[in-house]
Image (tube, rainbow, N blue to C red; front, side):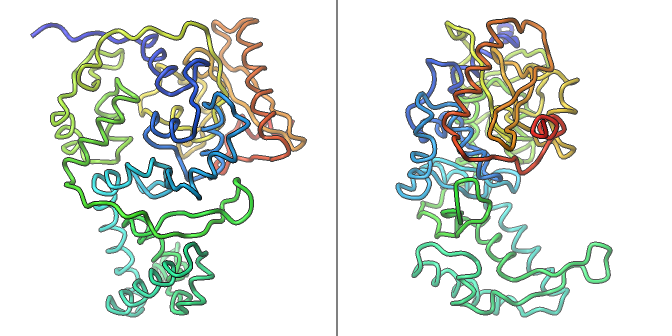
Length: 394
């Protein structure tokens, strides 16, 4: 057996530039192309989806209209629960794979937790909850899309409350609708629908999930991991376990199933998809990007030293590990950006290495590009970071 091929940071950045649609010539024509290239877009903060798409479109002026069309008219993209109990936006064709590979195990735990908490509070039993669930899904089918409050008009039992963790310091009151709709979302029965208000709104309607076949779990895990490696490889086992939220045994089984190739990285052993270990040339021209908070590229790997210096992280990430808006130059995070109340896009470089006049001009152009399509819209990340707060305040 020959020696493993070494893939250094420079080549990893070249792959990222092209496969994540960040270098100019690699930019996409549609939101669907962006989502397919990245496998998943973080959907916890609705604005992140649009900002991540806009950063990668050849014509960002189409961002809001085309992304809204894909999500709420064509339904070619779906916002749903996925890996690590987190909401993502996936290509609709991938929903069956996500559900079978990840959703089923999470869903079982979510439903068991709800039933346990209801029982502890002396709330109605399993049969009662099943009736409410079936009635709620029927109401949603009639309405097409609806808020939790609208569904409660059709099924009043959704308004019932029960005490969570009675007697504990974190005791609270839960409404049946809040917990049940979350369980149904994780189970792949409902998905997030059109928001109430603008595309930046965190308030949303629910819709029935698109129908999809039931897949074999192990096969679905192999499919999902193969797609992600093609987009983000090379990656370490720790990266893969973190991104998927799976057990290490699941990761290893999926790696074997797709015939992943082992390569040598600065951080140890990594993996690429079968046949993807050949050298990848970088973009012809240097590139800059302004990526939003929770962007899938900035959050893509657990081991991040190859694209963001450890000393930058306290200012760019919050205490829970959520990344804020970042400034990129040739595959490296060098700073952050924010939008001020007057709409100005402002940015700051934290890592000056290799950042000269050309880089600053390119970053300035990206800030103007972003400000141009945002127009009068104001965007504040849901999870704010030290540098973003500082820049936004002026």
